[in-house]
Amino acid sequence: MDEEKITKIKLWLKRNWYIALAALIVVPLLGFLTVLHTRGDNKDFAVSGLHLIIVKEGMTTADIAQLLHEKKLVKDPVAFRWEARYKGLATKLQAGPYQIEGGLSNGQIVDVMVKGRVKLLRFTVPEGYTVVKTAQKLENEGLGSAEKFIAAAKGFAPYDYMQTEDANVLFKAEGFIYPATYEVPVGISEEKLLALLVRNFDLYMREEKILETCKAQNLKLRDVVNLAAMVELEAVYPEEQPRIAGVFLKRLDIGMPIQSDTTIQYVLGAQKEIITFDDTKIQSPYNTYQNPGLPPGPIGSPGMSAIKAVLAPEKTDYLYFVAEKDGHHRFSKTYSEHLRAIREIG
Image (cartoon, rainbow, N blue to C red; front, side):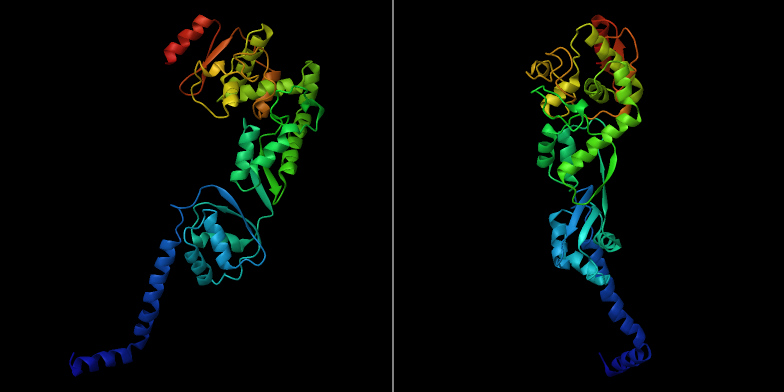
């Protein structure tokens, strides 16, 4: 490069030094932000759902980043540390519990943690959930140990209507965990959480006067819940619950086995789309194909509508039903009609 060109460049830089300085600052900064964005995207790494993260006293930003990585929330711990430092928030990540959604970027996670710790956590028990499924859900959401919850549910029966002497009952608390969304304190024990869920069941039974209705009909609440759990799991659409309850009650009245696939699924411990003939031969007190009457105990947590359906069933001549493709059921009065319905549905 000749001296004339060098002189022109020097003169330009002298007159436009601020542009050159900006370029020296902005270009590296843009590159840094691009790297932060790329390495801070956790969507292809994170496990979906809400996760409980507890930051302990004395943990550094590096410790927090590593914890988030181990919980499958942050793909690159170093990038998370850079993000916190870039935002000037590395020293503001305080100890305490945080609830973080899987899939958030590093920047979003930093923002969540700076906004504040959670004091109450939301926990939902869906209708039809068993003790085991509820336990697995609370562990997956970081609320406690599935093993401890299951152990607590085996003999937990604080209300008279929960009591049973049947040694075949797997969990005395089964069926009495009320399906709803709860706000629970951080660090609640499995035993206290179970007590809260069961107490809520009792509150709803009294508020809806279910105990009074059972007494008026000379029914035991435990038997009502037992039948309602099957109704809950059989009916995809709530409007069919009273009719399904009527079929089950009619079968009980004439001494006919209930033959509910839901009890086979309970025995198997998994939701099986098609129950086979061999499945119905499984030896278990809960198998309503092989044993007359109700199973030893409920097979899940029925909602209020299923419980009310048992107390106010639809009275028909139907003894059979089979699921349509869309989840509705086709009801039949005779076995021959039932077989024809099965063939037509395919």
